Image (cartoon, rainbow, N blue to C red):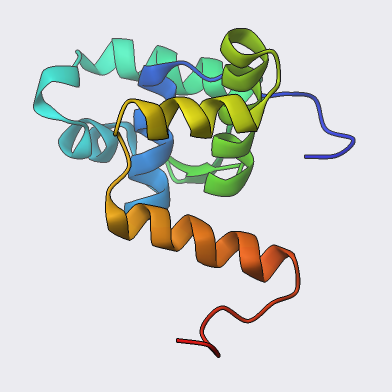
Amino acid sequence: MAGRKALAITERQFEVLRVLWEHGPQTVRGLMEHLPRGDRQPYTTVLGLVQGMEKAGLVDHDKQGLTHLYRAAVTRQEATGSLLSDFLARFFRGSAEQLVLGLMDAEQLSAEELRAIEIRLMDKRGNDPRASS
C-alpha cells in the first residue's frame, strides 16, 4: 500500500468486496443474492452502496447493454492490509507486536495458527522452517 491512500472500508462495503472477490463481477441483483442473509437490503440500497464504493475507488463497472457489472477495484490484500493498518493505528498505536501478544495472552490463537505464524516469521527472516521439520 506504499504511496496509496489508506482505504476507508465499512463492514458492509467489505461484504460486497468479499462477494466480488469470491464470485467475480456481479450485477446489483447478483450481489444481493450473494450477500449474507442478515445483510440483505432493497435493490436501491445496494445500488447506492456500490455507486458510493465506485466513487471511493473500491469498485469499477462495465456496462453490458442496460446492465452494470460491478467488479472489485482493490485486491483482498490491499483491503485487508489497509483495514489492519487502521486497526493497529487506532487500537494498538501501530504495534503489531501488541496485537499478536494480546491475541496470545487471550488464548485466541490455536496451535495451528501459532505454527503458521512461526513459519511466516521464519520465512521472513530467510529461514526455511520446513527444512528442519
